Image 1: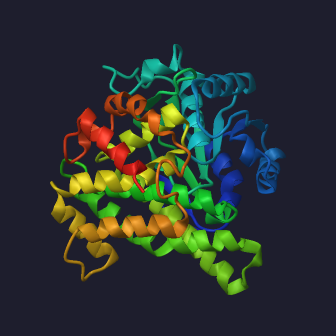
Image 2: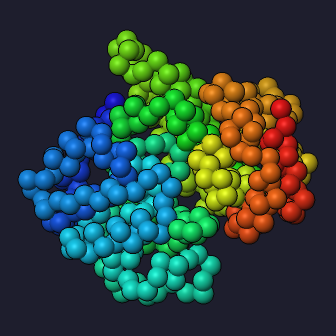
Length: 394
């Protein structure tokens, strides 16, 4: 698999070994003092140390990795302090959605004064583009959020874990090194959860209100890739990449490549909007600290059934991506449920460890979320209550 380049929505170097282009990428940008931003899990991996060492001789390198899996304001504050102390002129974001989102916010706050929440999406005006930001390189290690091609950063408050969205086109990394080899070691359960996350982005973008033919086309092709690649990627992960034959290892790499592309396509498509699945999931992450991809997976079907009443023709188009002979959009919802079972997603909220008495606390958080206004069907508190109740049902 050779490294290829395409420029949508930013410059993407895609293929096995793309990470090895980091040095020349930094050199071309004129960077001299890069800061790696990642989480503790990635920092402990052998390939990450090798990546840092590959540029350490030519550049003055520092590493910030003091964060976990759910990004909070304290992570951004600590990362910003590290960036300022190092005087970095480049930030290399390595990992899943959490490190990438933190790295974007660090890039912003290294140069701008005030509080991060001053730049929350929806506020009247973002500050003038009069500060030169550090050069940002994104190296994703999961195929889910697609944050590497996004113009936003989602960070939670330290106390309530409410998610806040920081948005400006300046957060879009100018270069992505998308290397599917970095996703080969992802465990099966995370492969499944992040993969369904990508699928949710694609489907909700396609169903979102409004007209955006480009986003719709990208979403449909992304769904096709997920349908072809997610189940094999999970199965290969269960067996362990090292135990596969050379031919199977090549198939595994191809499946991971398709999922990495689908993830970026989902994040590109959802500029059109998302929907009530994400509002449900954001509430679960806020109240119950549920992994975002898993939360999306758990809430996917109840919201799809709700939306089917107003966009049956759109569900039919999705069904025909899976089966060209499909005659009813309900077949797509059935396929989603079957795929979730195949890749090992728990069947209910209860099976995932969510207490039933959390519903009333989840509803106001979901209602306050900014994703459901673009849902194809308006959602009320009673609707959210029904979604959660259905997701608890066996």
